[in-house]
Image (cartoon, rainbow, N blue to C red; front, side, top):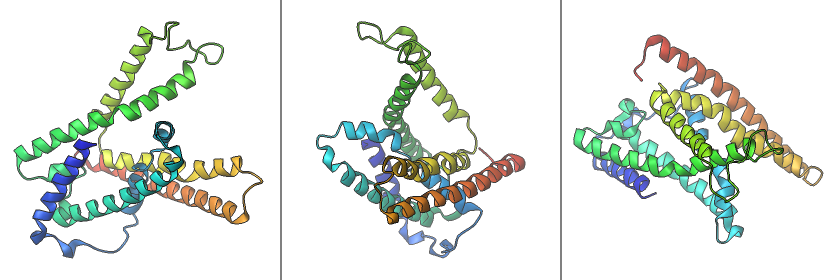
Amino acid sequence: MVAHLAINIIIFAYCISNASTWAWSKVMFRIDMVEFPIALGIIVFSYTSHIFLPTLEYNLIDRSKFTCMLNWSHVAAALFKSLFGYVGFLTWAEDTEEVITNNLPNPTFKGFVNLILVVKALLSYPLPYYAACEIIEITFFRGRPKTSFPSFWALDGELKVWAIGIRVVVVVFTIMMAISIPHFAILMGLIGSFTGTMLSFIWPCYFHLKIKEGKLEWGDIAYDWFVIFLGFIFGIIGITTSFYALVEAFHIGLPF
């Protein structure tokens, strides 16, 4: 959290310090029908925090405030991301990099900020990592006959050696994915257009309809189906445009 705030403050302060050179003329209030679906996929992907929500709710002191916390967190995140992206574009315009810290001109300063970014990534890793490991354990390793494989845990409550090996494999796999995937922004848009729309639009409404079947007003039902419809539309358009952009990036040899 501290590292994340430090990066945001540094980048934001740098952008503000260059306000005199902001490229106001480059800002255009129009929608690029090719780029927008990719951007939408990235935005949706940045909000796919559903996998962490049960853990967060479980660890709250007052769980009755979970919904309020969730609403205000998403509002604050939306406002900050919009402002951050807008100010960043004003500062660097079309030269804005996928990783915005790469726009910093001084190599030493850039290296320092990227070091903080690495620290932030390392500190942010445990939450999704443990969530992923928990899903793997619940799905495959609860012991027979519940699952096909034996339990991660020994009778004394300690994690088995081979289970530690599986967790190491998860870490190594994610590291290899992170350092080897080219055109990460486009790929993130592609993934976000599929998993993001499913997690953020389609499945929540579908499960809400199923769980509350027979108890919902017609307005709530119509609203859920409308969101599901939007999810399918956004997903199909985003997947198509992102896949096309990814193919084009490889075809013309854009730098990774």
